[in-house]
Length: 185
Image (cartoon, rainbow, N blue to C red; front, side, top):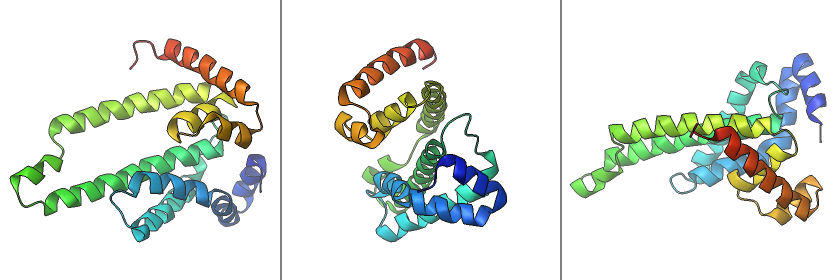
């Protein structure tokens, strides 16, 4: 397993080799995100295609990766989530177009829903910036707990931190986030 610093040096020297290593290291992670967002509307083949698209997008935007703003894993997680949501919406639209009776047209998003989605997206981006500003390992803990739904024990094992330390960090981070986001959301 390559460290993020090793991967970054490989990125500048051999981008194709870098992508290969990133795929080896993060394939299961990306698939889990895509599967979580798409399993209710897509089959396995569509989910695998989404994962391929995610890695293409990672490679295409590789020059935008800034480890001072967050970890490579965070970057991949956010990009994966956004791509999976795009695919989810496309599938929802195609389902809505197939609807034939009035009752089924409730699935089609209204202008109000689109406006709400834009506002929610802006709020999410602001929240992500504030979570990243917490620094490591706090930001990693918050992403695992509230984005991936991992419990304290799982986070503790993954990060090599005591369970009570994880709980304390979550509690303190929530206070910091509440202060940072006061009035913004």
